Image 1: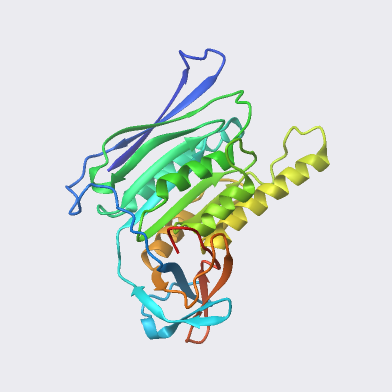
Image 2 (image 1 turned 180 degrees about the horizontal axis):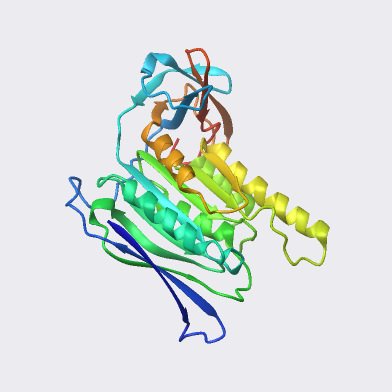
Length: 320
């Protein structure tokens, strides 16, 4: 059972900064049936494509076979070399914005995230990090069954800037090489920039890696203290574009909220997506050069269904 405790206190390290500590107590569960070691990356030319299939009402279709699918690379049909529809363990990275601009939402975000973790299976793995002007790991890669101790999220006033691109890069580096079903869930107002990473560099990395992005974008319509309304509008439009692109390019979903008072349903949708996700794989008839982009199209030979999948592959050395 997961318990959330919210504590407000002054930081002993930086007296001028208000710190809100969100303490999540994670009870020790049963022992995992899987080994605790990291997944070893295998260099391969197999291109993996996660896909989610829904009907017109948005309900996931979980009874499809390999013969129901077709994969095309730049319009050329490819032979499906790998297919899985099993309920494999999931690896999830929760990336949570704790900058001053989201102070009002952090308690609800923590509560909903904790409830989401509680619905994962014992053999699933979880990582979590918080970010503002820097990114900090708050849960290292851990099997859900082995979670214990306390998670503290700290939100502080007066941070110079929210480095969201650096935070996404942080998550990508820790998810790179993890095989099987995997996702990065970003909870943020996305109003920020980067020092070691950029909009373009993180989108490029998302195209090259396997994790699916689910982006939960809140506070979009909120007024901000910008002297120049046009500059603010451009800033906001960039944040929307970024969060949408991360999700759509990888086959995930983009969610926009005016408030985070009821995001449990969104977490439930994401979990259902991951459980019902199909894993497809193919070896390209003509592998691309390093850095070359090609369009991926997944089709399902059934009427009245929609497919969400990665829509591009970027070839790189030593992989794909």
